Image 1 (cartoon, one colour):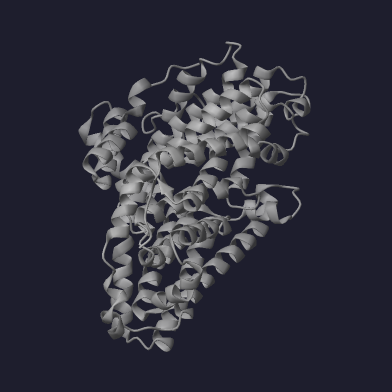
Image 2 (cartoon, rainbow, N blue to C red; image 1 turned 135 degrees about the vertical axis):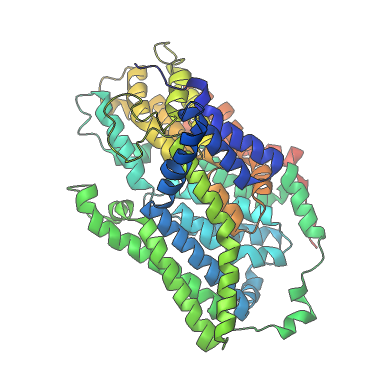
Length: 546
């Protein structure tokens, strides 16, 4: 195997970005510093060439990606839409209509959790739709924006990653199919990636426990660490001006003025994911039956989000103009305010995406790789370095029982450093499938698919990728969750981290380690949940209702 061109230095950009973001609380500057560190490494300190590469090969090439531009369009449309329905007073009326359903802290948090489960088909849509919609409800209930962004973030990727009908499943199944082909098993061609996907769901310990933890925090009304302090500050804050006499002077349109654009966006996104999935299925998955699962898996979420955002904005404009009777200049002012609100999210997402591409192993022109490290003039191969260093410990060591734990930790580190769960899965799944198959010594793929160690190894990739994503300040969903919830980004990272670490710890100590010792997964799942309840009761504090 060829020697890695950069070694430990390939970790420099994410380390620089994460460290500076935590210390300075300036995410944009920190991400830019990480990118500068990266280009200086790939150009061997050539400042002129590094500057050219920074703008041409990283920032510009990332910005003009069609899917990224569609996400930018959706984000701008959502910002303008939310600003319009706030200007009409429709959002305040919607909050008033929902008030009987969200009477206190428990019901407010549980409602947000259930809403996150309902928007299961795409993690981006989950982050963008829920944050702005639920923010007024959380403000009225004196729940912190940190709590809102945590609930949004901790339901978005986990539920999309588990759902058998989502924009994630086609990617996950493609990685599994590639891994099966790499095993060399005689019956690998006959093995079903979907059956493996379903079979390893109980072994995705972190994903399951992260979803349950959100519900447990709401039911027990207990928080820990920075989140407890944020919740107590929110509970002690004076009521907002909108709740008093000043609200009488503001417009107050019917609640449908707020609900209709959101529903129109959601229905358009669903319809277009289905339509694009039907169109893409013959080329993406030849011979596949047009089932709902296969169709949604082949759908284009970026296209659906773009046009869903445009339909939502058009609906909001029409209702604001002819329903709420806003003048043209009021419409324009509100839309501009909304666009300005989401510009920081777009900038952060742009830089974070550029860093994700910089640390990847794909070419600038997205050409197929011909030889090892062929594109090292502008790619750092960070995932390849971590894979080589950490997985060499388990290969050839007869340590199959430790494999799920090693893979979970490896996936977490790669996802944390690169800020992408998709990229982490792409790096590890095709390699982990044959590695786990060889480690357990199965006679056939059919036999391997029944082995807990094999399934736990696959589940550890898919769960660890999301765990690292939840902990990383440069993750796209972490950024979107904080921005669309109106929460300071570093405050969101700091308050979510203890909960992610709690779910991650029980996933290892009462999950991957014990699976290696032969303990049944059906005993471990309730044991993990019980442990989280114990930690919340022992170390959590209550926030008094006000």
